[in-house]
Length: 325
Image (tube, rainbow, N blue to C red; front, side, top):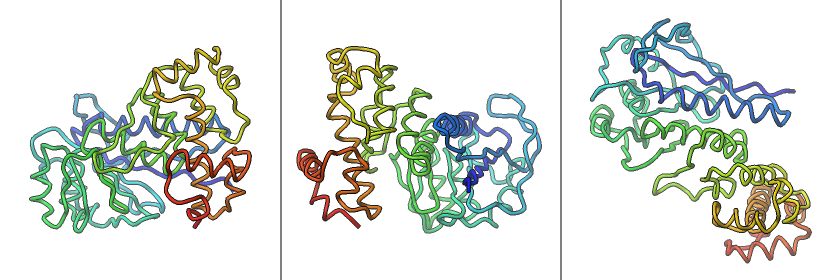
């Protein structure tokens, strides 16, 4: 059975900051395009809803055809709240009371309803009581406002985005794209997220306390098209019998030149990159319950011994056997 795309509801109010919703929406659109190119079904259905059928955006352009706030949100779905111009969020502004009344009937729940806020969208969520007992962030201009509106929320500063179960919040504007890339990786896999970031020419980032970037996302903050082709190919099929000449053929260059390009733009050798990707695939397989032999084969290692050797060389904790869940 073909999986049903996740409905993503962007809530538009008068003055909603265009980059807060257009950037994440484009990331989802490009993710769908990448999936179609791989022969897979689209993962996201974009919906634009609000209390008003037509409104002006933050830059004055009129947005029409906005759907009414749905009586009930399908499960699972994502709900996205956005920032507005101004020093504070006016809870009595045009359309806001109607939105807050509707929001109070929503309850974020893992696997059912994911709430994502961009910039001061977190303040709207706070006015609706959706951040009580949560950790959240917002644009630095709104941090004190967020804490005042939601005193039972643990407001986190100096972070690109914050994850707390079914609630995700980002600091504002372009960090909304970072947040959506994280969720795209969770749904579609890190290789698709990396392709989206490359297409959008976005540098993948994390806040100071966020976990280390996945190997699928590291070494991708460059603009070298041929190198991205190689990284896409290796990430999509790490189990293939990759060699340096084979990777160079994808880049349409010589092995020697590819090695120079990798060093200059990715800070790693082609074979080191291949090893890191294979280790990530093997580790994911181990966590999913596969045994060491199965995980090694899925990742493209020639044997259990080769997997264990690469594991030690990278200095990973424990052994493949102890990692298995």
